[in-house]
Each structure stands twice: as C-alpha cells, then as structure tokens.
Length: 210
Image 1 (cartoon, rainbow, N blue to C red):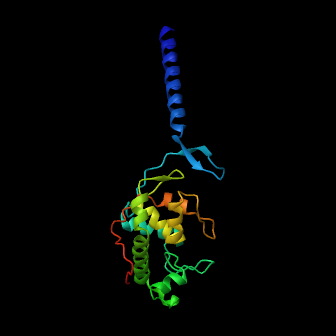
Image 2: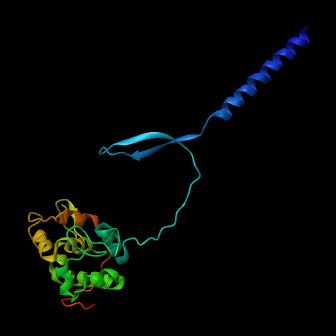
Image 3: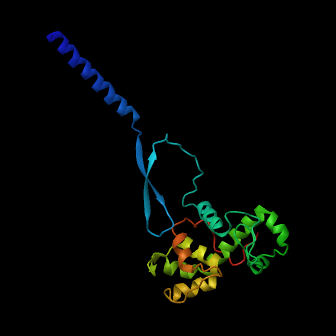
C-alpha cells in the first residue's frame, strides 16, 4: 500500500511539472514599442512581438557640405531635379526664375533636365549669398536670436529661403524684422533646422560662374 501511494505521488508531481512547462512554452515573448500618433506630444504604448534586428545601410553624409545641400534639397523638393512647385519654383533646390537669370540661365526646361547645372547653380548661389552676408556671418555666428544658435550654414540656408537681403534685416534687427515664404516657412525655422553644417567649402564670391 505504501509503495502504491509513493508511485501515485510521483505520478502527480510529473503531471504537474509537465503541465507547467507546457504553459511556459505557450507564452509569447513581447516587448513594448512606442509609436507616434497624430496628437501632439503623445506616445501610444502597444505590445509587439520581438523580431530579429534588421540593419539597413544608408549613406552617411553627416554635417559636411554634401550633408547640408542634400538636407536642404530634401526640404525644398524631396531631392527631385524635375520638381516644379505651385509657385513656379524649379528643380532640386527650388530656384526662382529671377535667380536663374542672374546666373544667365534662361531655358528652364533644359535646367530641369540637367542635374549638373542645378548643382552648379546651388553652389554659385551659396557663394554669392556668403559674399553678401560675410560681415553678418562674422558678427552673428555664435549668438542666439529668439533662442536659436546662429551658424554659418543656418544663415546660408535662410538666405536660400528668403534672400540674402531679408536675412541681413533679420540678423541686424535681432530677429524682430522677420520673413516667411508663401507656405509659412520662416527664416528662424531654417536657421535652426540647418544649423551646424560645415560650409567652409563655400567661397564668398561676388560674381560666381557656373
């Protein structure tokens, strides 16, 4: 009788252990992932099954001049050479026709098809704007205006948006004389968004040639 009792106890223990491991195997491994949702300053936390890490290799341009121009181009046109916006601004860097004429570019159809010409025109405009704003760059870089740290790259980006003259007014008025384009984008926004790039590659030039 004693032997049968011991065997019964052992059997119950085995059944309990097996059933316990079975429940463990049924549990899904989860983690918490945060996703942005439309409401401002709000994050939704939802369960998500763990998946193997996938690594993507993207070209890294960092804070170089290439990084500067590509970041600016993406903001202007998503980097598309053939883009024309609703106000008639053209190409990867969204040039106005009057700016193109300054560089003796009159055939806008050919301009949209010529990537090299667009890149040359962008560098030429940066060179011209740097020449116009060279004193303001020396005076303003390192300062904070309306909470934004002023950098040379931010100034050149803002000049691309608003024109060198409007940027000069903004800097010399300590941010009180502002500007925004037809879409509501401000000088202050560009000063902040494109701050800290290395634009020392750009030479100040009153008459840059393509």
